[in-house]
Length: 254
Image: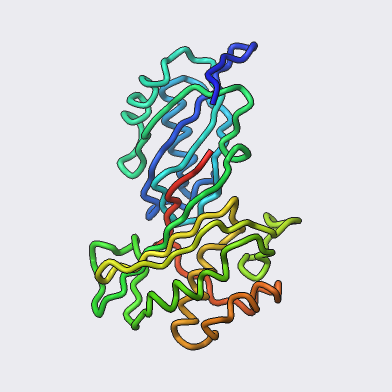
C-alpha cells in the first residue's frame, strides 16, 4: 500500500480495531441500539473534532466479535497516525481497542480492497457449560466427530453459488457466488473451532455453514450432503443459523 497525501488535504487512514461484540448490535449504526460504529465514530470525533464517513470492512451482526476489523477514513486533521492510535484508545470503551493506524493511498477502501476474510466459530463441546465462555462460544453438549465434520466441510471449498447458505433480506441482491479458500474443523480439549476463509461472505453464511455441520452431526443431514444443498440454491435445505456468540471475524487480508 502506497503512502500518499491526496490533493485536497485529506489523508486516508487505515485503522485496525478489535472488539468484543457481546453487548453491541453489530458494526453498523442503528437508530435505537448501540453499535461498534457509533462508539468508534464518537471516539474519532473526540480526537479530530469532526464526524467523518467511515468505511468498514464488513457488516458484523449483533453479538459477533472481531479480532481484526479494518476501517478506512479520510481526515483533514494533522495528527500523526501512530499518535491517533493512542488517542482513540483513550476515548474507546473497554470492549473496543485500536490496534494500529497507518496512512494509505487515497483510493484505498477497507471493504472493496479486501482480498479475503477469515472467520472462526467457537463451540464449547463439553458436558457442562463453561461460564467464562458465555457469549464467546456456542455451548453444545452432544458428541462432535471433528474428523468427520472436517471431511464433510471440504465440500464448501471452491467457487460456488451459496444461495442455500444465505439469509435473504433486502441487503442481498445479485451475485451469490463466493470462493471459499479453506474450511477446517479442529478440537483442542472441549473447544471445537471451525475456521473458514473466502473472498467474501453472504449474510449469515458462516453461521448457516456451522448450523448445517451441527445437523450433519445430529444425523439430520447426510455427511456427504453439503454439495447437494449447494446445488439446490434454496435456504430451506441447509441447517439452522447457529447463534452469533461463537462467531469472530478473525483476519482481513488486503
